[in-house]
Length: 88
Image (cartoon, rainbow, N blue to C red):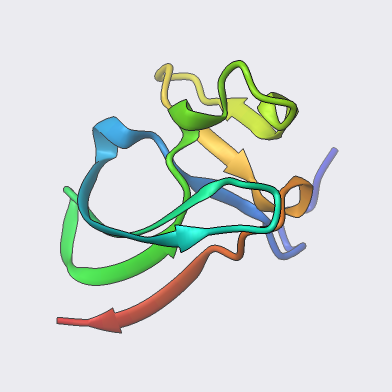
């Protein structure tokens, strides 16, 4: 059982939860990197990937599906960093 204290590398990355601001580039592995806000927290801008874009790629193994059917991404398995950038 997990204690819940370890830092998580899992980011909520389902496009249905996000408002995409813009694509800012690609990683060395060719994964698109975006700036976005979450619909439930529109004041904070994050950097990360869109989970659905990993489907059918060699990095599909980084996907995690939660109990509600939303995708998250295990960022430890790809070469993109999930970052909180700023508050608007």
